[in-house]
Length: 261
Length: 334
Figure 1 (cartoon, rainbow over the protein chains, first blue to last red):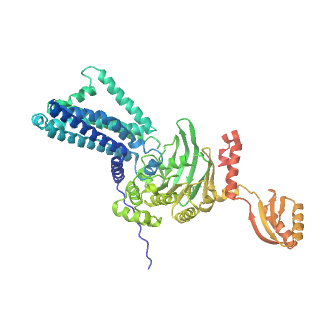
Figure 2: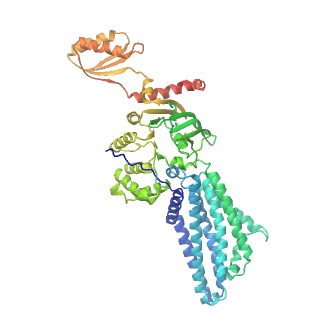
């Protein structure tokens, strides 16, 4: 009796390549020195800042509310993180150009899936890390300045502040990933984006009140943390951020699927 | 090369790639590759071999022309086509912090293989490429031989119909190179292969078709026999035995024959070059008759030089010499 060999037909899961790149990128980003530097710097800077303010509060008797302390810390965190967040975002696709991209993009994954997975992974890492750090800062602020905090820090305000900063960071990450995908070198991409970001930021600080200056907006965080904010402003900010991210992502998808790797 | 009703594995038409309007990497390449073909892609450095492979894989977009794989046009988002291809780049690089198991699992997931298929498959492949003892080691500590074996495993994990291997024996020691060539021969039984190589003896051993690129231009595409048939160097070496006096006498007779352009005797080794006008078989028959008449024993006879290598070098040299004639006689060259 002839025993015909069984014909094995491979089954494919269409979304598995996306998840593979997404999960791998999450793991690799968290293990990267840029990410570790960002977290360590933020933790040490925040800890030092809080201890300094506690010292002033207790020894010199200079009383400042928890919302003011946390607002100041948020501002330092955002400004300090920006440079490293840019590196993380631009390097997402840019750093894998060449041979490494060869061995990934030559497999059964489309450019669209690859770009989306990289973009989403970096968004998740940056926003989740910032949220964790910000929540840590607020909890520390609450306990260290408890006497003032009970009547000062608001839960809704804290949520709104994290949401607002997260929305801005999401736009920065999205633009960074797109620039990394479109430029032919990571260093070039990072330089271009730094110049763009700090240049636009500087120009906006020179503009009068209706213009959203980063300094002014960040200075307002202490009021947001107290719960004194316009809900529509936060909703609009998030909506604008979603639109900008979508536009950046679409441009990145189109550009990356037409570029050589 | 393409016959009727044959589903072509690869087909390119006027495939051209110009980088940033500065460098012409590939110029008007049209060719077809049939199922079961083992194609050796030859050419000097910078000939456009890797560019050609990258265009076929959809890693690069053509400036002009098109490349079809399995009858469909290849483009960067053609994941379904790449699912049927196994690729090894020249210098395979792996993501940091991975082991062979995690790397092959990652590659299998990139092909969309579900867990119940990919786990047994990667275990089988790790065993097959002899990396079982190193399956938990970090890839950063791998030797070039181990790296090459892992790259082979990665290129086979999706059971591809087409294998594209860019210089698979590059940097391998003799033993590893030999097992790579044996593997290629075994795979050639049921897969189509495109091998880019600088090593002509590798191509000679495993390929049945060749394609020669020079400065981005396709200067030859056909069977290996066709390539070898393009030259008739008619240069032979013979090791002889017998009395020295008889050998010297026979050599004297051979020198007097027509179309024996060079007859040199060094100790007992005879170096003979034949002319192009008379068929070499009849000249060789004459030579053997002379040796027999003088009671000289023939120990070995061999054709001098690697035929494929010689044919390849001749092709490239002729192409270089054509100058402006290339404009009007490209069809003749191919």
